[in-house]
Image (cartoon, rainbow, N blue to C red; front, side, top):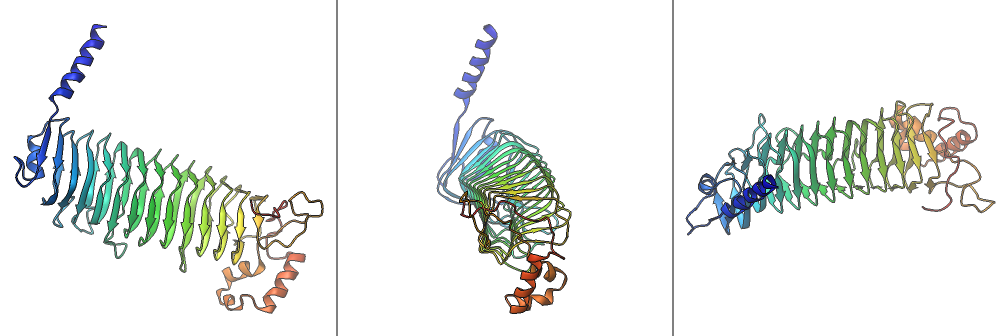
Length: 407
């Protein structure tokens, strides 16, 4: 009992001793660095309206820093805010003009080797990297925007970059004009929800060697590739939109060496390739909308034991393509807009199987010049013959129970 009382008194005294320091033109502290120097752990720094040309600001104490129409200008030097303490909150600031380098990752907000940070409601602009977190844990990045300055992959940086960082929550952020909107490497147990990533140089989101992460209700639009997921397992990608990734090698989502993951209730719309799978195993794709893409699904022959069930595959030029005659994947109960079968027993399931791989989609992988013959009568005749007597396309890549109506 006495021990609990002592702990309560310590917390109470800590709360009573915490103070608020104000930064403004006519305040005791006229720049942020001097306020941080005078502050103690647990204090709050209120930054009033104005432009603060501070260069690089180091936050090395457990502080809450809150802005009020306040702009911190990094003057093109290094990191604008460099967080070096645990339990730091940065809120309602505009953070702009980090340094630019091809040898070091300068960011609007940089944090390394810390935990329990919160970055809420900030606007980051003209920084190489927006947020750069390395070896960080248990942090929240919420309701921020980051407008990058990337014009190529070399000098451009990522909007939110995690490296060896775990248990990070990334909610309701808007990111554009970075190299990659979000980038994670060796970062596990991440929650990414309700973010928008657009107009990036390379990927809307890109992550590698990162496991057990959840991506829910995000939007990836007008990126060369919406999302690239590599060398990871037990991923949940649910309720996201992958739109308008167009070009020679453009994908809604690119999967490389992904295993035991779930892709559910996503929309893949108007991409060159909706879903691309390379050496990805035991994944489940269900209840997705895959619509108006060049290729809805492209499976390389090394992608095994994946299940496609209950998806709506609508108005794509090609439904499924593969570079192999073998098919160790399952397609069942999908709706295919190109299906021309019948349902005599009125159970909602087509009475004849649907073979989604067209001979033409198989051939142009090996002979790209044949793309000029799209929709020509000669190709139509070959398709009819191949459907009746499959020779080149996978015999067992078939939906045995195609749905007659959209799901």
